[in-house]
Image 1: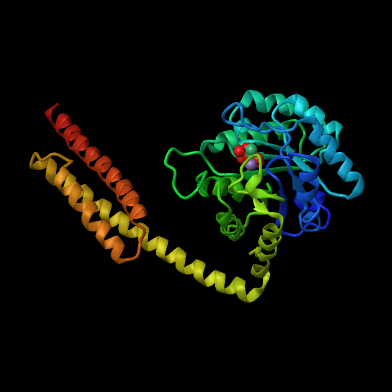
Image 2: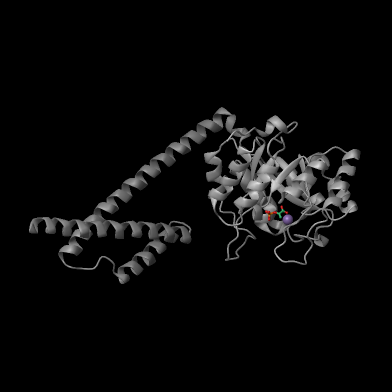
Length: 366
Ligand code: PEP
Ligand code: MN
């Protein structure tokens, strides 16, 4: 994919890129009051014009008249405006009223038919497009959507991480699964990666810590929902912050990479990385030792006609290791996941040993 850097098309770009504004444009007055106080502190103002709502009957956006309010406000003050487009008609209207940046919502990214239609509608048009992750944790759909826009000639591309739907509702409205956007970034290092802590968190108090976490992971920017009167917002009232809180959050955010260009930080980083390399080496050597013991026990079980899997031993392993993990301050869920993986590999190895001995016996019978 041919992707242009943010600094090529954002005037005075300085990390982090800040996109902020209301979840939805609701009225001309609400738009003015949500935009004017923050205009000098954000790079791009956001506002949903068409809202993808799960159930019918809820507020579905003001549509074209919102674009008229936005374009008349642009005659008074200068700003870049971003909105979500989900159909070619949205694209046509957004372009007609001078929307500067488009984003593709999570409910659209999941559908390759929709994405193709949007990409065709944008063929040959030089407008920035940010693609939100699909609703469910499937990296290939996210990549596929980005590739479709890239093929249509869009070079000002970006990805927005807004979290993933899960049935288990824990702390977050949408589980972050940070490894997915990080995998995307490692495959396309030049692709700007933006975090949307509002849709991940779902509540106001989680916005700042999530945004900072993203910057700690070297994201390029954030997209935050801010409203003049968040508690009375017509959509996503629990997660929108007030315009004054937004300004506080933006001034508190610390981009992390700048200090790493200094030599002393780089040296220290190098020392820690070397220790991590060493620890990983020892970890793999210990796993290799464990695997050779597994092979031995496989041979022993086979010779003595004992089943590979014994539930009592399995239970004992999980119980004792989980205790050891806790004593070592390891997260219990992590310890259990790791053991499950080791145990799976161990059963696989022992099965191979069983089959191998059988093969040998078969051959010697010949
Ligand atoms: C939004 O940004 O307001 C929105 C609807 O987002 P998502 O597509 O992430 O649900
Ligand atoms: Mn929203």
